[in-house]
Image (cartoon, rainbow, N blue to C red; front, top):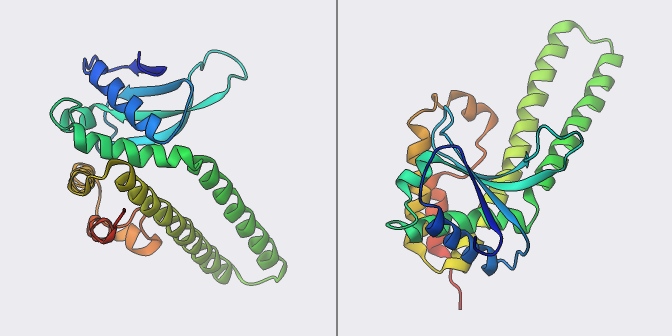
Amino acid sequence: MYDNIIIHDSTSNKTYLELQKLVSEIKQKYCIFGEFHVLIKDDPANGPNIEMKMVDLNPKKWFSKRTEVLIITKGILENFSPITNADELKALLAHEFSHTLHKDIKFKGITGVVIGLIDLILLDILLQTNQNLIIIIVTVILMIIVSFRVFYHINRKLETRCDEEAYCKTQNREALKNAIKKVGYLGTQNRLGGVIHCIIGYSHPSDEERSARIDSLTFN
């Protein structure tokens, strides 16, 4: 175990030692201390993924505390080996630990609740005006679209900041750009067309936008 890095595996992948080293290294760069959990899972339907998430590590225990863990799916480890692709995997880890440092999971949760409450207030006001059903339906649809676009706009800003900090911590521009492109490609292989996203927006900047932003960064 490196710096209290605990790996929970459901895929029988055996790259634990090198993965622990990389996670420990990036964790220390962000001055994040204490026990940290990594959960290795099978790929979801939309492709390989790596993300920070609040997880109940003791689901059988009542009132157990949800813990922020790093979830890495099997496809990520297959395409970003801790041994042969260590630089690219470190870039991904640095991006994810930036989310942890700034408590982005909690921030996005609060943001979603606030947007939802505003929608409910506006809906209540709309219902009190006794408008006809068609106007109410159209207005609700527009509210949903605007809510998603606002939330995704905020999320894109967070993702851009994490890219910047990942480059700052790793100082490896090409590894970060390659990792972003590779993750984007792996994910889009199993996704539906972007018709819905053209309406409600995207949760992440495009790979081209992210690469251009990384190219523009300079650190002394």
